[in-house]
Image (cartoon, rainbow, N blue to C red; front, side, top):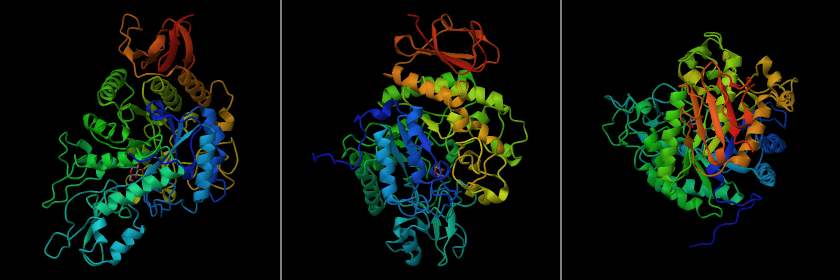
Length: 553
Ligand code: GLC
């Protein structure tokens, strides 16, 4: 066996299993902190906020893409996988960030986007310049069209952002893009594609990054044989038979990645973004593959005790069986913020709500935040790892009224202006109560912030005992003391407040989490209150509130 590689930057406390119960904070780099004053967040800005990230008590930071990109899809269209976008900084800036993070005992995860490159990637430019059938085209999925003269796309596959998943090039061939046309899909049956990505993993691992988030991990293996079968991304079959997503062959790719990640000491961690059915999602998280896969079940769930209980049971059992650790997520850069989702009437179509600039149906902001705080406290008591999205620690709501001409999400144009997309959760976060961008930077930010953002700024919430920031800090500090092992024991109706709207479980040593999903109060569980997501009544746990208790003594 070869000697493990020694990276340039290492965390102060080496620990191969750090990721198993880590709280990971997601930074969306262009909207976090703007140090150079161009309205766009940058790497130096993130470095300047490392002390803040450390003060939260999270274990790791995941950076969404910061690589050179024409920004057709918020940076998920990568033109060079081994560089920093010049608008965001340099590789030296990245190394300085990594060093600062490690000095603060924060691990760093970077985003790898293997399903597609940007159309500005040198490979795609070479593919366009080359002839049909050339090796340059064979890195992507170029095909002749259907119809008498190839004038129709090769299949009826649709792009995730709307419209056909095929675009025609001047010589008449078509190329596949599961996302925007500026994101051509790579052909992962091509060995050159495989070896190039393994080099990218080594490039960042050599610098000292601690792990990778793998974008659209379930999309890499495709059945491209003709006749093409229809794909049904939203109800994927359990037998891996969809032509585009979650096919069995994909796992061999990640076994190869695991071999690369294990060349390092400690081995690099990885988490798959795989929108696959729960029983198949865990396959990506096997120890021989990536180790973790995002579990989006709670993110997609209604605010309902029974649904939460079922999801938690299912996922903790799956983690036990597979040897992976569970992951828990309520928000990220792709979905309406959870404080907002929970403040809208049950079943609201959030795309339609955004089209009304957030006016119809009415958002109950206070209720949404109360529920969000309760849900977060429940998540942080679960075994496994939790992912937190920037701004949720401030209790931020979605920004639903971005003017149409300032929208950046490709969904807006690709759907003929019927779906606004994801910009409302990507608005730069507020650091100060006032200023041209609420402390994000010295000038107006690249996406406009709502006027009320200042009240939720870090400065406004810092030290306020009732603020969401204070709650997150207290919860993360308590979790750091309490969290160990994977054990979770449901508390039944005899010992917990007996109500269908309550979810209650014990961890070890009597650490108990009780969440009241209902609107009315239930009896407060016995024990010493460690933390609560909102004010408690006298002997009562109010509705939409979570409490952590420990045995007296
Ligand atoms: C993932 C990302 C999303 C991006 C898409 C295409 O789902 O989270 O933001 O648009 O992949 O790369």
